[in-house]
Image (cartoon, rainbow, N blue to C red; front, top):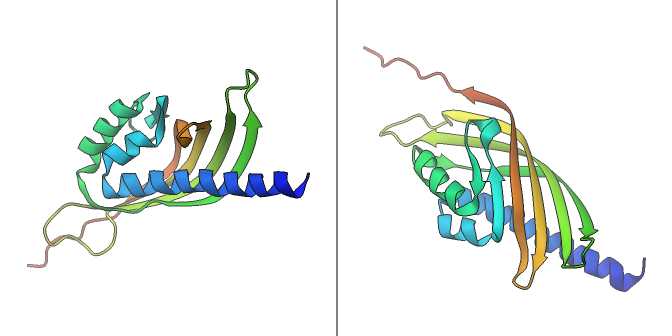
Length: 158
C-alpha cells in the first residue's frame, strides 16, 4: 500500500468514526434532525433486539423521540470499533462496516430520582456506511442488545 493510499484510509477511518460518534451524540441529546441527517436517503435502522422497531431513519427517529423521552439522561459509550472498508461492485462509491460494542446508562425523567442510572444496557452495533457526495452516511444500523439491567428502586424511608 502506498503512503497516499494509507493516508486516504486513515482519513476515511476518522470520517466514519466521526459518523458513529455523531450518531451517539444525536441519540443522547435527542437531536432527531441531526440523527436523520446521518443516514442515506434509503437508510434504515433495526432496534428490534432491544424491544424496538425496524424502519427508515425518519420512522426510527420518531420512535426514539417518543420512547427516549422517558429518560432525562442518556449516555452512549461506543467502544471496540472494528472498521472494514469495501468498494461496491457497481462502482457507485465506497462502503464501510463498523462493528462496535456499546454501554448505555440512562436515568428516568423523575423529580428527585437517584443519582445513578435506572437502566443500563449493553450490546453490539453493526453500522453500514456509504460514501456519498455529502460525505459518509449511515445506510444501516442494527442493534444487538446482549443484556439489560434495571436498578432496584429503594422504598422511601418512613
